[in-house]
Image 1: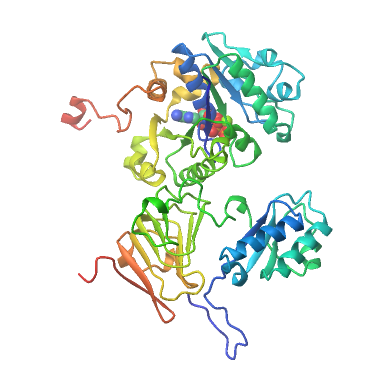
Image 2 (image 1 turned 180 degrees about the horizontal axis):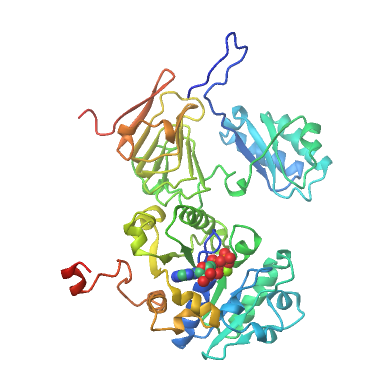
Length: 242
Length: 270
Ligand SMILES: Nc1ncnc2c1ncn2[C@@H]1O[C@H](COP(=O)(O)OP(=O)(O)OP(=O)(O)O)[C@@H](O)[C@H]1O
Ligand SMILES: [Mg+2]
């Protein structure tokens, strides 16, 4: 990325992306919310506490401001790091401000805003060698779908343009990557991306990214591994030096 | 057993209605009792393609709202036995399509022992499209050999894998197959269109058929007779093949390569 910076610039845009988790509230009953979220936190979902969280409500047309306020209070009380409220035409623009939250447009993200893989995919049982948090996806990941792995992510099928892979660890794609792959999304700079056929829209490791246009031509449509060296994304032949 | 099939695409104008009409007619011609439903509330079209627009009294929304019963809403085709059409309404808005309402209509068709119900989906990924797909047992994704259409089909395939009743009930993906329409081998050769192979590679689903770009389709819609009734035409034959494959017969794919010049043409460079 080339950004021309004026002399003595008092700010700078960093080529970093911020990953946020979307918490999709199917109902706003604060008691069951409290109970279920604290349960999840006990079950080692501690990551919920440091990840920035965007709250989205399933039925904005039915959500009263009071219900929203108590739900948000409940979440804050549990230590969830709320940063924004997903925008909806049904929600008054003032609501997010009233809740002390930013406002974010998730576009048509109803099915994007899910940190679970498409129902049919998660299949870590059939992968004997996989570590506990490894997620193995055997079905194509389609445009508009998002797959999130707490550890490594292994994909055996094509990843379409408009699809997004996110992993706290490494990402392996034994097929064509046409969408986005973001490894080390919680800051692990040692994470890598391994890909059989690189045709990506974007690749990112620990927030350092390259868009399609900036991918080195020598590695396009080739088997590639990507890693981070300081701030720089490194590309290498997947099969080692040849 | 009634099989509910959604014909969908994401992108508009790719040939869903043409395909729904051909598929329903083709199945009925083979003796299967079939209904084709137009889910494109507000932009009805299927009745024109089926040539029954002058016999429409009630529509899908009337039946859902109980203004008419199912038997009153169904139009019996005049050319082919076993074929029924349930048109969309031109005037109402999409909110009339409720899940319960659609389910009621489909259950009514089950009671009538329909073998196939073909749901002609509207374009997009809004309510009408979701309703057309929700109860489906199987999907046909109609795609044109161009990048934007392929991408929208990919998106629809993803939505189908999570937004059908079967998916919600944990029965997994419904089977989805690709129908590539408006295929022009000449334009593929000139690099102006994606090839069947390209599209299949990107979408990674089974291929139900390839329908060539054909004047016969236009003629058919002008005369209100589904193109599959025109078995002299390439598109009619390609649809007949697709119907055969749909019910499990094996057919080689045709019309995939540009028409070769005849022997003389080749010898003399004509
Ligand atoms: N194989 C074909 N050859 C030539 N023209 C075709 C072919 N298939 C469809 N068309 C033409 O493309 C146009 C759109 O077809 P159709 O109405 O079936 O698409 P659709 O996907 O149902 O559109 P919508 O999204 O608006 O419902 C029509 O004018 C039709 O005649
Ligand atoms: Mg149509």
